Amino acid sequence: MNMRKVVNKGQAQRAKEYKSFSSWRYTFVSVCIGLFIVLLLIRLATIQIVSPKYLTQQADKRSIRVTKSIASRGNIEDRYGEQLAVSVPAYAVWVDPKAVLKKVAFTKKALVDSLKINKRTGNGYYEKEYFDQSKKWPALAEILGINLAKLKKIISKPHGRFIYLKRQVSVDVVDYITKLHLPGIAKKIESQRYYPTGEINANILGLTNLDGQGIDGIEKTYNTYLQGQTGIKRVRKDRLGNVIDDISVIKKKKEAGVLQLSIDQRVQAVAYHQIKKAVEMNRATSGSIVVINVHTGEVFAMANYPSFNPNDRSQYQAYKLRNRAITDSFEPGSTVKPLVMTSALLNTKVTPDEIIDTSPGWINVGGRRVRDGSNLGKIDLATILQKSSNVGISKISLRLKPDQLEQTFSDLGLGNDTGINLIGESAGTVPHRNHWSPFELATMSFGYGITTTTLQLAKAYAILANGGISYPLTILKQSSQPDGRRVIPQHVAREVVSMMEGVSKKGGTAPAAKVNGYRVAGKTGTTRVAVSGGYGDDYISIFAGVAPASDPQFSIVVMINEPQGDSYYAGVVAAPVFSSVMRSALLLSDIPPDNHDSSYTLLEKQ
Image (tube, rainbow, N blue to C red; front, top):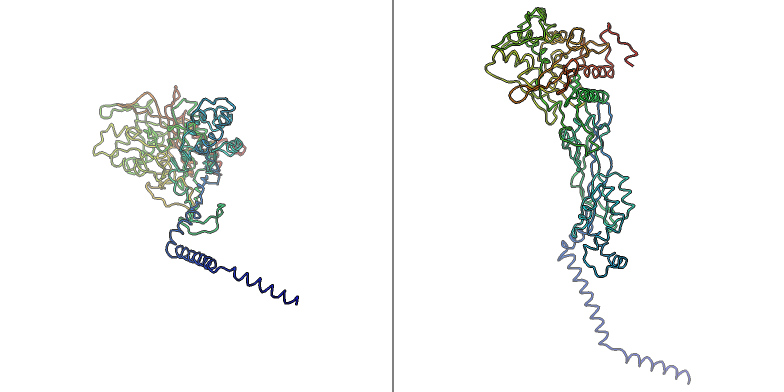
C-alpha cells in the first residue's frame, strides 16, 4: 500500500514538471541559436569571400614591416694595410617634443603646488619652470654643446615628434645622457668616419658628411665603391617586434669594398712633416710634395700644407682641405730645362757633347734681354743644367720649332690629365699658337708662359727616370705591372738624367738635395709669382728630381709657395725637403746604394 502511494506520488510530480514545459521558450531559444549560427556564417562569408583583401591589408599594416640591413662604409688602407679611414660606431641623439610636453603637463600640478603659483596660467610659463627647476636639461645642453635657450626652443614645438639634437655622438656621451633619464630623449645608432692619421692624409682622403656620403677627395671619388648597398627586405613581426617570417628581399645587401691606396704611409708621414716644417720655417703660404714610383706610376706620397685634422670638424676651412698637389698650377721655372734639353736631343738640334757659348752672360732676344747670374762662358749641356743657365737653354730652344717643343711637353704630360682620377685636378696650360715670338720661346725654355702642377711635373720626371715610358698615374695599389707607352727614346731619357746629376753636386744649384749613399739627378726652379699685369715680388721654390740616378726608382717634386725672407731660392728652400723624403723612400723600400764614394754607412741606414 505504501509502495503504491510512493509510485503515484512520483508520477504526479513528473506530470507536474511536464505541464510546466513551455514550447514558445524552446522555440525562442532555438531561433536565437539559429540566428547566431546564421550571423556567424554570414560573417565568415564576408571575411573569406566578400572582403578578404581589405582585412588582409589591415592585418599586414599591423604586422608587415620593411627592415634595412646597413652596409658599413668600407675602410681605406695604405699599400701595406695600415688603416687610413675607418667607420666606427656612433649615435645620433634626438628628441620627441610631444613626449616632453606630455611630461610638462603631467608635472604641472606639482609645479603649481610647490611654487605656489595658483594664479598663473599658460603652458609656456609651466614649460619655463619645468626646465629652470631641473638641472638635467642644462646638463644635456652642455654635454651636447647646444645653447640651453636653443634646446628649450626645439623642445617647445608642440607638434614635433623627431628632431635631431646632435649626430655622431660617442658612446660615452650617450651613456651619460641615458643616466639623466630625461623624457622624450632617445638615441639612434649610426656610424662615424674616423681618420687615424689625422692631418697627414686629410688633403687626399677628403671627408664624408653626417650621412656617410663622400664630399671631397678620395672619399668622394670612390664613394659608390666605399659605400656598398644597404639591404632592404619585407618581414612579418609579432606584437613584440620579433621577426617571425621573411617575406621578400626588396634590395639585396652589398658589402662595401675596402680601398687599398698606393700610398706608403711611412713615406707619407715623412713627406708631410718635412713640407710642413719647410712652410713654417720659411713663412711660406703653402707647399706640396709628390712621390711617384717611376716603374708603376703609383703615388707613394702626396702631402700638402696647410692641412687640418678631419676628426675635429671645428677646424674645417675650405682652403685647408684643398689638395694643392693637383689643384694649384704654377709656372715651373727652371725645372723645365731638362725637358727642353730632351726636346733638343730628340729633334737632333744638339749633340750630347756640344759646347754652348753663353758669353758675356746675356743675350738680346726680340729686343729684350735674357741673362744669367754670371758669365759662364763656354759650357757643355750638363753644365747648362748644373748652373741653370738661362742663356744656354735659350740658345738651344731657339733652334727648336715651337711645335716641336710643344709636342715634347705634351708627351711628358704637361697640359694633360695625369690619369690619377682625383676630383679637382688641374691640367695646367701649354699654349698652342701658330706663331711664337723668339722671346716667348726663350722664356718658355726656363719655365715662363706655361703652368703645371706638382703632380704633373713629378710625372714628367718619372717618364725621364723610367727611360722614356709613360704610365698613367694612380692613387690605387697595382697588383700587376701596368701597360706603359714609350714617348721618349731610352737613350735620350738616360742622357738627360745623367746631365741632371751635377745639380746636387758641388758647384750645382742644389747641393742640399744630396742623399748620402745615392746618386741624385734633379733640377731647381725659382720663379716669380704671376699677378695681374705681370709678376709680383713673391717667389715659388721648386725642386724636382729622381734617384738613384743609376737606376731611378722614385720621382719627387717639392713646391714651396711664396717663401719669405732672403732665402727663397729652391736650392735652399725646397732641396732639403727633397733630400729627406727621398732618403726615407729609398731606405724604406730597401733600394741599395749606388754611390759608393759617399760617406754613407750601414749605421746611418739603420
